[in-house]
Image (cartoon, rainbow, N blue to C red; front, side, top):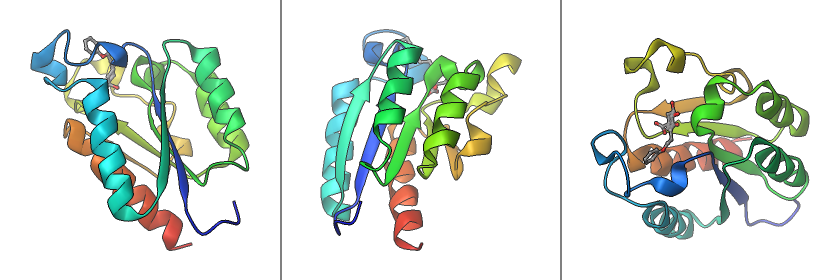
Length: 150
Ligand code: CA2
């Protein structure tokens, strides 16, 4: 944590490994690998280090969040469907108290009512939703700006 180079953990929740392979009308053509490359390039430009992980399992995501304590300065997360269900992921983020930005490819507020509520939003600095892969890019920019302004 004391090193000058900020470290950001990027977490992708369930089914995001299917990006670019299914439902391109909702989630776009780009694959998770494409998003990770874009974020790596953005991170290099911003002068920060990132590590990206995807899991389909709530407990694995919680372990990764817990493991980020004292290791990462910020968390960029697309919790996917766990956004709308997971008190446990919210509690993990609150417990480690790592500044967090929540991102979504689609605009969750324009979709089904069950997607309108996020358990994560109250423990995040902010949420960026609806801009496809740009949500991730801008989410990383917003997180780094926040971390540098502290
Ligand atoms: O818009 C987003 O980024 C979401 O987090 C995506 C989640 C959804 O449950 C949230 O409400 C909004 C779903 C991720 C599933 O990703 C897929 C990708 C390709 C094909 C099928 C699913």
